[in-house]
Length: 467
Image (tube, rainbow, N blue to C red; front, side):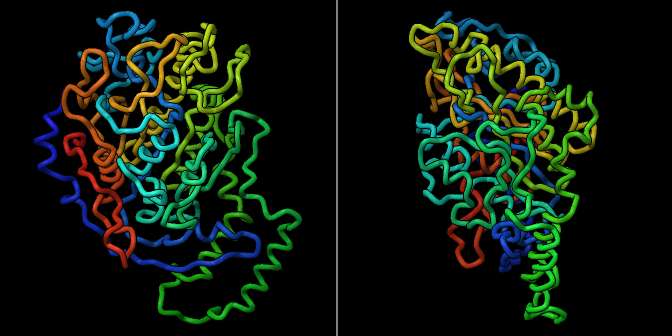
């Protein structure tokens, strides 16, 4: 199903249907060695709609022309070696390596005309995750904005990132911070390097007490802090849920209590559920993301690392969607069964994302959980001499589902080679505004009560994606 032209859509805005709730801003401190947890848990009583998001980041830039925007009539050097298959939505086709997602096309929308101006990984990712074509160095990412404006209501971090991204430049520090919103809205990072939930020995060390500090010592610190607190037992001008001490109490409970550890414990899931997601990093990480959303997280970003193919002799990096190929190495080309090839990565993506959509739907969570699948850009329409495709930002695809997004839709049309939008180009600003609106956040909402120039977003939501 095609959606009406963007020119008509831009005359309207989802923001006029969203009320901007009153904002309350608080200060918070630390409990002993737990310097960041109280900040991650701040602002917990702000009124909001109960919407969440799982943002699946295909770091490296997935090929749009080999997945969601295939061109079966183009020459071989354009269309590539993979075939397209029909989906459950008449007239819509996707890659043959995505049969489970093809069977669930009624659950998601494909946007085929995203575009921006940078083919650099660091700059492109910073632009993509801030939703801005020319972002400031300290521009916050969507998760930090959600943490600020729609923080978790339960004793759980609002913004979680599963399996860190792999950068060589400044973006490494950017995505792990809260931008100008500060460390209170930085992601709660889980999994360094190749650490992930598919490893049976993996543990979330971020919830461990400081080295050498037992639970008994934590309790002693807590009692000491209570004894010297200037507001203990007193009524303050803020509601009790807003007090400095309350955030310290929540941080203590998060570390010393069992609730958070249980949320991260995949052994509590049935074997058949874990198998359905796939016993690989992306599958188990997405299962963990679903558990974290249920536990109260507002936005969980997941690096779409699909694991290492055991016979691939290649540097073990986790940005597996960066499929350039290699000189005189067809065995590591984009169409080969290798760690950095689509025949390895797409079946695992198909298993994991289809399982996530089914799981959220069956649990009644899909109506309130936005699912986003995309990378910082796409790949060149023409296959290169190294049996791969290179960075390409001028036209690429994303998949969105849940939280009121209309399933079974295709937005935008690229030209015959998937090189440029033929109509309805989607800017990063409008894409970000659409995601914010799906989460119940009006894009024009100020991020700071004293500075109305900094707002959640600067674009307009694509209104017709909702319905």
